[in-house]
Length: 235
Length: 90
Image (cartoon, rainbow over all chains, first blue to last red; front, side, top):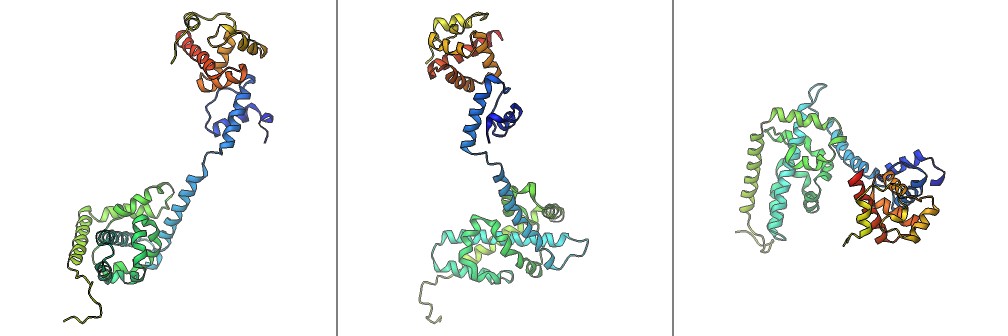
């Protein structure tokens, strides 16, 4: 690629590409602009593709989220609001409880009762399958909630079976991580939010949040420490 | 620090007309000769180059250094004087 052989128009376009402010490419300015272009090329082209990569990655997350809806088995051709709600509800439950688990973990690092409280809370019907993957995902979950959209999806089908309440909540935990991918989100996500906001008033959501928080705190505070020998008989 | 010399004051206080390139602050005989060899024999031609570069002081300084062999101080002086002249008369 020889810059000298390019036309003035091409040089001008290249300068724009590299974000170099410039005037007309005339005889007296051409040498300077060619030099500028060479320097810019040596530095490496501005990373235009990388933001797309970011979007693509997040879009992948969203797509996985999308495809798990059918197995829930509640929707007919027209009614797609319920599974949307249940997914968001499930995600909220999931996110909230893990937020609290993490909080408790932080405050009781390396103590026995952490594991016990985790166990108890996992004994809730919709949490059973996660018992074996507990330890690793507490930390991971806090760092990147999005990665849990995939393992969590298969359990969402059970959430609505056991929980009588209907909750709306795409927002507090999920939204921040998805805000970045808003421009390329598949259409499925948007109707989810829109519909859920029509059906569930925000105060119910807050109330539920507080209820879960209170419950978890209560459970946690009533833990007994298990420092003693586990094989000792309880009398 | 920019202590404006008499040459600078003389240049920016009046239209440059047909002044030679050596009238530009920072451009002495040696640099002036080099510029003249590249057909920049009048001050207004150097002004023209400054304007064609859209008054981009950084790019103009870079060009001037290359064209005349000026050092940073001399190029900065010339650029500053042209900038001020434009403010006054353009």
